[in-house]
Amino acid sequence: MTKLESQENTDHPIMSIIVCTLNRAHILETVCLASLVVQELPGRLELIVCDASEDTATETVVREWGSAHLDWACLYVQATQCGSCSQRNQAVRLSHGDLLVFLDDDLELLPGALLELWRSYQMKGETYGGFEILQIAEKETGPGKLVWDATKSLFWSLFGLATVSNKRRVQPSGYNVGGRPVTQKAALSLIRQAEFVDDVEWMNGGGMSIRREVFLVEGLQFDERLQRYGGYAWAEDVAMSVAIRTKAFLRLVECRRSWAIHHPAPGGRMSQRRFAAARVYNFYLIGSMASYSRLRRRISWARAQVGLMVGSLAWGCVHCSVDRVVGTIDGWKAVRLLRPESGEGVVHD
Image (cartoon, rainbow, N blue to C red):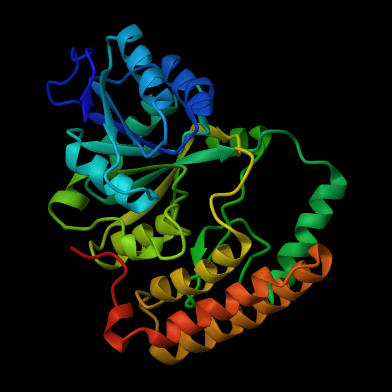
């Protein structure tokens, strides 16, 4: 672990910005860290970068950034285990802020995002456990793309894997729906509404914040079982969101005045086969936490599996590959091996 020189704000920072990264030094520097520079700071802040990279490029970037921005307390730490859940858990243990803000290395915070996030926390802190940053679409969507997206949503809604509306919901099966990035015009329309926050059932892990008490008092953490099919787990944000609501009995909110843009980095974190397996296994674990009856959960999950297999077959025909079909079957096999009690809690001590 390497502690940087900028320690001006280490005296109980109000917010801890946590970024977990892997071999993306340039993206981290030009997207995420560059957007932090333009933020109006609401008070003392700290930046924690947990790095699982194979070289020292990221450490160099963070060291230079910390030296250039002494108003931030900076901490660079080498990951003890590569994975979105394990790296975040490691960073949480080192944090000091009252509000922990989790950012992807390819997320750009728009000016004022942190200030508005902190204001929402001050107003809703005791009622809510999680605060999400509203994600803005990179560019306006054309009419053709809008029709295509609506058609896809309508089709996947037949299997409970999507919704025509954009409301963030978690289905009885455990699969999350809604939450697509909105245009700036739509975001401005939301701001004009009387309430500048909106309850949601799940948060996007690329830009979400969680009260410190959730980790310290409630004893929750990101579940590393979700890394079974790859270090960068699928749906760990949904699992944590459900845990906050069902274990800590706290609500989640979308902060309509705190904006960010996700610039997806090219290349995936896992193979198509592992992706398909995680899409089955991880959401089964999440669904086991739902407050619905067991019968309703099982029917909803089975319905979703039909949709996933249909989608895998269609993808295979287009790409001349059976990877997703085989991966889906791998996920089913893994679910069958779960002990009945092992799926009852996704987030554990």
